[in-house]
Length: 117
Image (tube, rainbow, N blue to C red; front, top):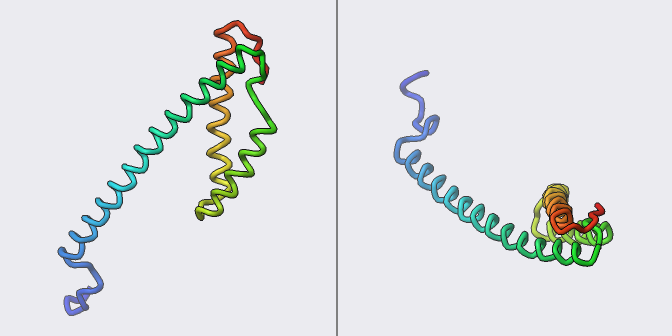
């Protein structure tokens, strides 16, 4: 490399320091969103535990395929509005629903109800 090449080829230390500060600020925002997601998921699971106990008491099935289909449709629409990949939103919901159903079956087993998926 020629020592006479313009400095633009490699960022100077001031530009690098600025970029690193920006990176840290963005990552702090990401960390805050991650924390909010965890708290929201915990809150959501508190409600789904209530649903599981109610279903177990009344012998209702752990899964509700009609509701799941409505939720998928609704969340795909929300994802599109938010410019989030609807396929990702559906996969994310699928992961959550699978965990919820697992909890509902466990609650039914623990209470002596007959669980149905």
